[in-house]
Image (cartoon, rainbow, N blue to C red; front, side, top):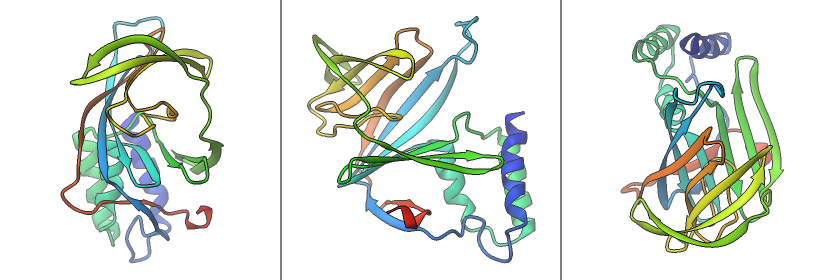
Length: 225
């Protein structure tokens, strides 16, 4: 079913494909990634069966002023699709991704613009893009005295309520970014792990790397920035 959803999304692009790249939208480079934090999300789709979990990888591009959080498969899907210029290439592209079982359960992207205190939320739907803006200051964090070590980093615990759930976050003051996975941000250090108390969603940092080449943080809805 999820493969079909990706194929439907791609098929919607066929009518607009007129000898130009599939993702040939007006793109504005907003920043460049100084570091890339790699996260894994372990999530439960059936609250009645907590023994069945799925896993998905995400990327947090950390720029000077703007950060981007996006699914790893979604990021490379868009990146690789930019060279498509014909219906034949598109069909081959669709077939290859369907055969590999490459799909994302989560179709969102979050651009966090720290200078203006706003976050742009972008969802890919079969009917087209859905986009809205929120304030970055969404969280009322309560810092605790609990400390630990996660992914090799010393971390401190904080708690908050968000989206109808209670969350526990572990952040590292040694990593000087007040950001984290999904919409989470606002702690004095990068969020290394965050999860809801029912353990339905668990984001955890795998590693953080410094790119060896220039990687743009970009968005194709130029008029928003």
